[in-house]
Length: 120
Image (cartoon, rainbow, N blue to C red; front, side, top):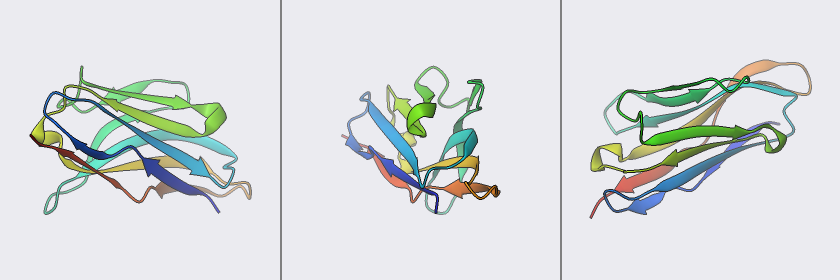
């Protein structure tokens, strides 16, 4: 069974950096797009960054120039390098994958979420 496991969240001071990782376990057959999303209590989940299988990326305007999404296809892992963090970046961050399992079933999978808190 495919699962997405996130790591790397935590508490950081304003202006600091964090790197989130998300690994897909269960040997997915093929991974198409990968993405990072975030959610603040009481608000809708929003897209932070996405990366397609060919490597093309998209970013929310609020994180352009500060965050970098990347993927390691050999490790079935997606990363989010977050720099110049601001208190407004505080949220639960979720990874997302559009993939096909070994049984040939295509679907959207979500990680369990990791808390990022930016505070002095």
